[in-house]
Image: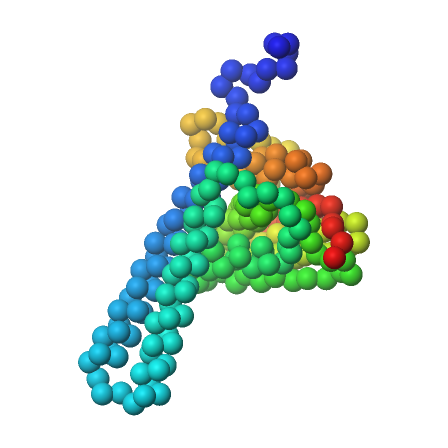
Length: 241
């Protein structure tokens, strides 16, 4: 093989970069999942104790049983999200509804948003299908990276907002993740990888991994314009139907 085509010694290959970034996201997600599952278990435990220790009417008992069942389903969904993100194998490309994946990404970060007082919302517009063809694990990885970056940007600020705007055109789908943070000071170095000794959760790792993933599907990631704060824009080819 031509030595000029080999990556520099110690450099991350694209596949390694994506896996390292996914491991970082799993770390973030597991921390959140532990708190959420603990809350679910506490709710189940308290409801079960009240159900067994008091002479409730049938309607009250039925309500508590329903709460237990709903909490059990939520606990299963939380753990399933972590399991899906941690999988190393790809589940295969298929047509995906971008808005549903965005809702899943925000649901996985709901505990952190509630704890930190972050207001997160999804906005949709356009006349296209809002669907793209790619591996759902990869799209979720991209969305989580951008959402977590936005969370870090608004941490400690008086106004803590992040928005996922989805514009569905006939030719492409645009996903813009914006925040109410201080904005970007050094956009030229924004997509650079952090130094080996630097923090693995820094934006460079996540943004670089997003670009590697998007390149596989003919997509792009760029710094967008926002009235305040920062905005990152993903563009992917749209699929019909």
